[in-house]
Figure 1: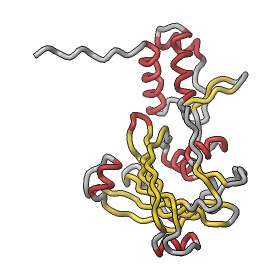
Figure 2: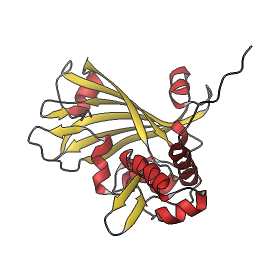
Figure 3: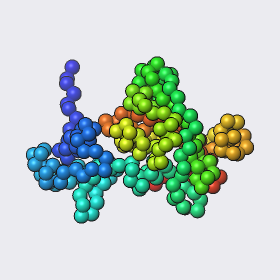
Figure 4: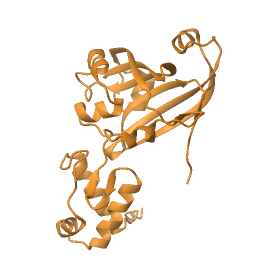
Length: 242
């Protein structure tokens, strides 16, 4: 049988992959400046233009952030601007006020077939499940059930969730060294069951959006699977396409 030809990768993509490997290894932490394009060009023995193209693509993918006159930094979930990258629910009046995250439960479990498939872990592997509510101006709008690999999130507890004042992803980054890079979502319309209706203070069978998300870190490794139920009476789901 003829051998398959190796897939061609442009030089700047190879440099991008090397930078990602350095990020994954923790060489530069979230919020920290990376070396200049000139320094990276010397390190990888390529032109500055090649490095610039790699960095430009990583900035477009929200892995790096360019700051005028300061340099290029590793993107961080602690940056307030990052909150609405993953939260796409916007009030009808357009006021992007930060919601309050209210943890309800946090418990250990073993991965079933679906969690195993979504998180890329073995059936029976330890996982952690979190239930929380997002409140906008004190009104409950989102109920999330979040599944996490137990080996990565050892030490996550309800007490830790309750004491944290930032976003959930900033907690994951700060306490567990985990950077969320991209997410894939599936959205469908559902009717509120009794338990969800009580939590969201609406009538049973109220129309809701079901948003199922798998979130990935470096290397396209799945590290979070969540199922959220969104009340859209006074909010809408915003998605910009380009």
